[in-house]
Image (tube, rainbow, N blue to C red; front, top):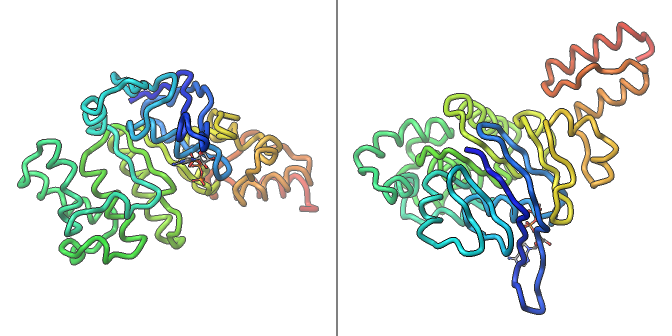
Length: 289
Ligand SMILES: Nc1ncnc2c1ncn2[C@@H]1O[C@H](COP(=O)(O)OP(=O)(O)OP(=O)(O)O)[C@@H](O)[C@H]1O
């Protein structure tokens, strides 16, 4: 599903002394079927931007089109409910979206609500919890007795149960250990490969961007400061740094070697394996590295 923002502005607490404009006439397109990373410093408007895609926020001005559906300042609740059947969101704090008595009930809540039979959706639960890496023994526990990482996995399972065409994840790997991070990234990559859905990830983790995203959008002060293929964004190290961001460590190493040797990298490689090959190639070109 393609997502188009057209002059989308959003103001929190409009017409109050605490009014805060968080988006300024944002216009951009997220192509269908891509994995898009939304990056930027804290407070730059990332969460505000993505919350428009599932109608959690409606623009104060302008509009957002998600596939065939449009969200504008006048969009009704009923239309937003319909939109959410296709657009799943995993929140920054997963405890905000878990509310049932048991993990299983939480996972099946969305599809049940959308009209799927309990029998049908329950058949999917073992596959879902296996995919997100949760133990089956947790299914009948309260979601509030889970660890932070387990809660996030349960929240992801509940959203995947809806089989959404657009999946939004706000900081999906924050507070996970390195192995947990890698597992979530691999799950998302595999799900994307199978379903070809559009995935939007808000993240501070530049390694994660390099690992998974095909496109990146850099937010700054409620506006889009940079956008394009992730590789093109990483090629502009100076601009990223001016926006308070940095290259992922492995690309910083490549950048350093490139400057030291004067050997340009014909194209920047985002996978560690390719990066290692490029470092080796540059070492052959210059024995001083
Ligand atoms: N509920 C709210 N009420 C008032 N202002 C808000 C609210 N939520 C966010 N803001 C403000 O809107 C701006 C954008 O916030 P937003 O949460 O979208 O940023 P972000 O880039 O996602 O930040 P972070 O990386 O810290 O999560 C910030 O200045 C923030 O203080």
